[in-house]
Amino acid sequence: MKKRLIITVMLLNVLALGYSQSTLSGTYRYSANADITFIGDTFIGSWNATSPISGTYTVSGSRLTLNITGGPKSPTTWIWTIVNANTLKDHDGDSWGLVSVRPQSSAVPSTTTAPSINSPEALKEKDYILPYSSTRELTDSDLRNLTKDELRLARNEIYARYGRVFRDEALQKYFDSKSWYKNLRKLPLGTEPVLTKLERSNIELIQVYEAR
Image 1: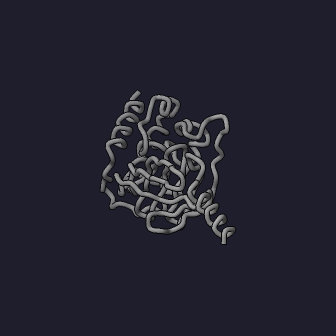
Image 2 (image 1 turned 60 degrees about the horizontal axis):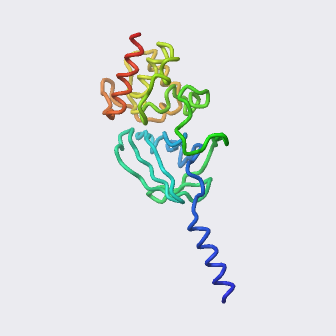
Image 3 (image 1 turned 90 degrees about the vertical axis):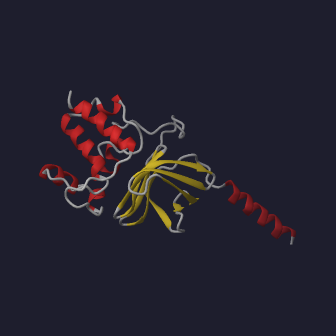
C-alpha cells in the first residue's frame, strides 16, 4: 500500500511540473484546414478553412494561453493544454499533433523576441513575406530591404489572410499559389475584411515605404 502511494505521489509531481519550456516551436495540426505555427513568442495559423488566426502566446507549466489579435476571431483569449512536446489539446478538447519543428538557437534564450522578419527562416514560414504583420508592429528593419514589389505583396498579404479576392489578376494569381490562401473561404469580390488597428497601422507604414 505504501509503495502504491509513493508511486501515485511521484506521478502527481510529474504532472504538476507540466511542460518545462517557456516557448513552443514548430507547426501543430488538427486537420487539413486547421494548423498553428509557433515562432518565437508569436503564432499564426488557421482554426478552420474560414478563420485565420494570429497573435502572441505564453506558456505556464502545461497551460498554453493564446492571445488572438488577428483574424475574424480576434480579439479573444484561448486556454489550451500542453499534453507533451508533440501534442496540444485545445479548448474544445481536440488534440493537435506536431508535424514540423523549427530549430531554436541555444545561444539565444527562448524568451526573447521572434527571429528577424527578414531572416531566411522567417520568410519561409507559412510562405509569407511578412509572417508577423498581423501580430506585431512592423519596423524599419522589417521593410527597408524589401523591393517595391515585395512591399506591395506584403501589404496585400494582410488582406489575403482574411480570404479577400483581388481584382488585380497578378495579385490573385500570386495568392492562389499559396497553400494557406487556398484553404480559406473567400470573401465576395469587392468585400473588404475588417482589419485590426495593428494591421491598419502596418499597412500605412508599408505604404510609406512603397512611396519612397
